[in-house]
Every structure is written in C-alpha cells, then in structure tokens.
Amino acid sequence: MKTAEQMELLYEISAEDGRSMQDGFWFTSKTLEPLALQPYGFKNVDLALLKDEAAIAKAAESIVEVVSAEHGKAMFEKLACMGCHSTGQQVDGMYGPPLQGIIGKKREFTDGSSAVANEKYLKESILDPPVRHVKGYSGEMPSYVGIVSESDLESIILYIKSL
Image 1 (cartoon, rainbow, N blue to C red):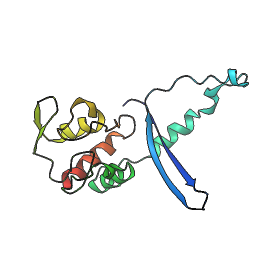
Image 2: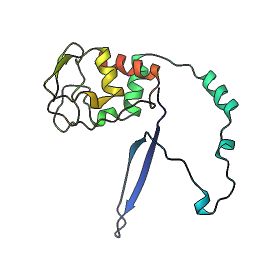
Image 3: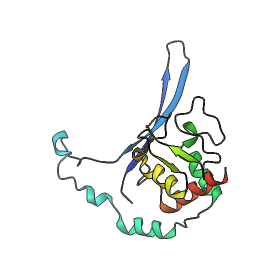
C-alpha cells in the first residue's frame, strides 16, 4: 500500500443578508513536498520529533480489521461514493456507473476493450481507476491507494456484490 494523505475541507460562506451556505469536499495528496520552515522564520525544527513511533505501533496493534458487507457500506458512505455511483440503477446525474448487479456484467471501455466485472475488476477500479474508463462516464474517479486498507477494500467489494 502506498502512503497518501486525504483531507476534508469544510467551509461556510455568508452573504450580506445573513444567508449562509455550508459545504465541504475531500482531496487526496499523493505526493508531499518536503516542508521547509526555515524560509518562514522557523529555525531548528525537527519534524521527526513529532512522530511517536511507539504510540503509532501500539495503536496499529489495537485495530481489529473487520471484513463484512456492513463495514463496506459504512466505508462506501464515509468515502461519499454515492456522490458519483448509484447503489441502484440510476444513471441520471451520476458521474460513475451504477453498482447494483455489476458483478458478471460486461463493461465496455473508452479504449474499445471490454471485460466482465468481477472482484479483480472492482479492486482495480477502486485502486487504479485511470486504467479503464467505462464508456459514457467521466474518468474523474480518484485512486484510493493509501486511503483504504486491504480489509476496507474487501469490505467495499462485499458491499457492492450485495447490491
């Protein structure tokens, strides 16, 4: 698994008449440039001191990874997959293909190739979406490499298979 950072940015905009709008979005940073603080007046900053390797290791040991369709549904919702993919057959207004009954269906891609959707296809589509774009849909899906664990991925696939 590659390391990536995913952040949520929440904001509120207020109009002069007092009306406000709240929204937010997620973005993924796959490459982080080294943080140089010296040009901004910070001297002798050792960012390595901010990492508590023992605490990180202890926390990782306490995590019990559950693989289930229920956990997959929770991850599907947490990652806001339904913003682009219908869990039914709805296609209007969707950026990505509907997922209900996708397993076993033939998928046709923009490069002229095709494949039958199976677990391997779903895994590839979640981790490396630019590899194949389904005809008629946007190719804007982000990669979830470094965002979802192997058990999260297996759970998401179980959930999609249950639709």
